[in-house]
Image (cartoon, rainbow, N blue to C red; front, side):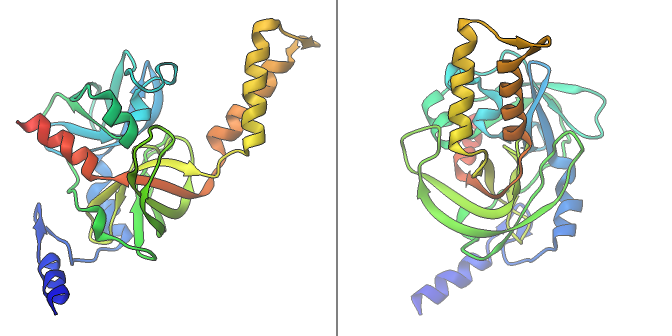
Length: 267
């Protein structure tokens, strides 16, 4: 009985004017929030997706989208910009937190862009979805925003590739590829409950090991056949497979990690 009362209470909670019990279609979610989903560029190259969470320019994305691989994701790229559809320019972006260990482990970061009146999403709670529930994702790769529909296939504490601490993760059945990292994961009520972290089961581990071996071999010289760099060609081929191969299973991190950074920024 007590559990039923708590459940009813949760269903009546209103977040930013959106009811947690209101069910929207994927089309409605896309129409409402596609303008809040942005592209994130680092050093003049497209790096991933993000989404606006406040009218005054707070943007959420995955930490690995804006941090450099060379620094093991502990340092941000020198030039971070956010592209907002319908706006005339790229917005320079500044991370609001320098707490590297938390950002890496939870693979989330909040950026600040200057401006006002931005279309933005409403944030919900990781607990709003469970196994077999529908979720919706709006990534913003180079072809523009798109709507993806998936199913929650797993949920619980797990370790990401970026840190040793358990993180609240959502595993979902949905096509994911590079460029989708940092995209918002919506519950059926239209609230963001997670941040796309990575695709699961990309290239085979054997191909990844081969790429590492070829990269290492480049320091010992290059072999060319008919003017073609053999090692470089193999590396480029594997990179393209890794970047463009679509996986049918993805993962996302709990939106509450971004909420903490937002709260810190407001203080």
